[in-house]
Length: 111
Image 1: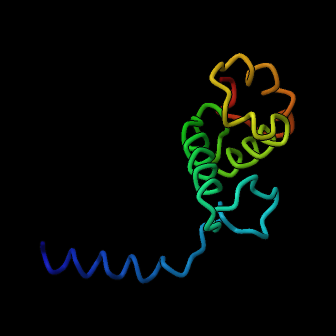
Image 2 (image 1 turned 45 degrees about the vertical axis):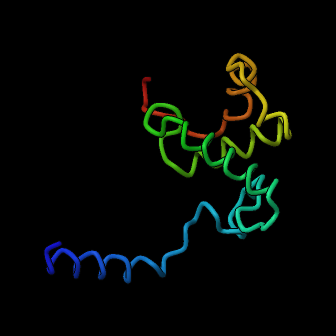
């Protein structure tokens, strides 16, 4: 690998390693429905499932900005509880989607 590229990558990592990931900030509202710092195996599985669900949300067309994905998922988890991680029919989510997201500015205007 090119020495200059290695130095650039090193600087990038050093500069950004001090920036916390806001998605996992325990002081940020709304509180996450999972504990990403847990050592419990079941909680780690739940967290992985939660993160996959968040990643599946189309930021551009559904939530507009990444922080809204967190808000939407927290609200869906509050509504469905642990059943949220077992839903396989999108119609179940569609039924409550607009109610739990009515005050979140969603997606691209006009879409």
